[in-house]
Amino acid sequence: MNDKAANTQKVYHVKKQDLPVSCPGADMKIWNSHPKVYLPLEKTGEAVCEYCGAKYILDLD
Image 1 (tube, helix red, strand yellow):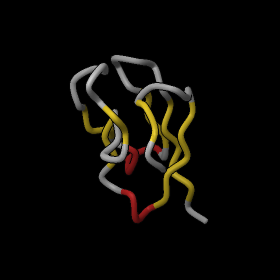
Image 2: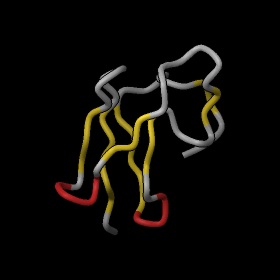
Image 3: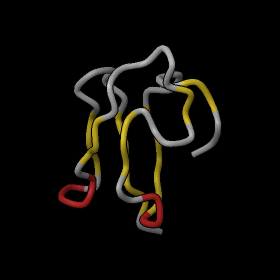
């Protein structure tokens, strides 16, 4: 992940070292975004943010 405005993509690929994952992410500018929520990627390898609909996928490679 990189420094960008929140909610500008609909799919984010994250790595195991990025866990725990929240939306908007720690490196996103959140001044105009939704409240921070943590996403349970560990269970299924993917999760969708209930606020903005962004999908986060855990890359195991």
